[in-house]
Image (cartoon, rainbow, N blue to C red; front, side, top):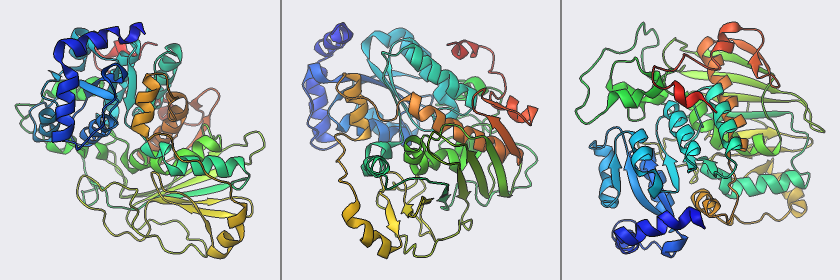
Length: 471
């Protein structure tokens, strides 16, 4: 109970209960708030674009007070919506000041920053005993993810959740029930596909350097934005989602969509880490940003009574996997949120996967989408044998906040989400180097390529950021 004393005191001093109730009705609809003593005080690092969606979803559960907001571009247009929603929240530009000056006023933190910026914020938060909700993937490099896993393990009282929200929806509970009932068994191959247009499609793949330096916006703290990657000149094509295009900042389509497509298979088939990762085909490969299309192969070893398994990853507009007979039609999937660039575009095959098991083949979509047995005749034959699938007791955001209060366990804690994120880190190295890597999942090192092995850690952090690499 001592954990909540400062929160109660804070609520009393600032009358957050009344202000929050008024806010919920005027901005986010009729949010039913828990009593003041039942709500978690939340600080939010990153408040624009996708981060804004995360904050709204967390608040809509009625289980938290948003007491602090932190963003490196606090006056930019993408931050204004959240600033207006929570006018009483304390504001910061530097996350380090947030923790130093205001750390005793909040219990948990949401992190909705670029992939490379998750790491330092998370490490500091866990050190200070703050529960962490961080967007996927957990971090940009394999070793950073490893340190985050170890840090969370060391501070076992801290709740962690990676933001692959489908991990709390129907897909999660169906896959778990079908696997436990032996419906999904002896899987030897998964073809995962994501063929929607990406931000870098249409860029010049003959690029010889980064884009030229531009004037830094007066509202943006460019140095803090870069964090441990400090050393790049500002360009508009590095910020506001454009960071996802570059090897130096993001993780491309794989890091963006992989968790939404492969998370349940990775967890319930106990895949862990692969023994080999190969760049099978890369169209438009270059040294700076992600290819126009990628075909990657991840080879996983036998696990107890489960056979070897290959995951084939396909991204790119026209880069499709083989379509099995009886697949049927892939319609637009309501579980997939529209990209920040606009509405979903019609696709030949929507983001998803084909799972090849013993005697059965499954097709599935992304996020919370459930699996279907194909062809349809086989599905009808199996219908009476399928187990009942329980409903989700809470969405991903409520699951995190309830876990902060000790009422539930998070479904995507670092111990589960970490190895999944590391699989994507290995895939990005293969994309970057256009090669095949042999990987030792026990020693956690690349055994046939010294440079690829060095990229597990990436470049040394900029001066002043080394402190966050200590467990």
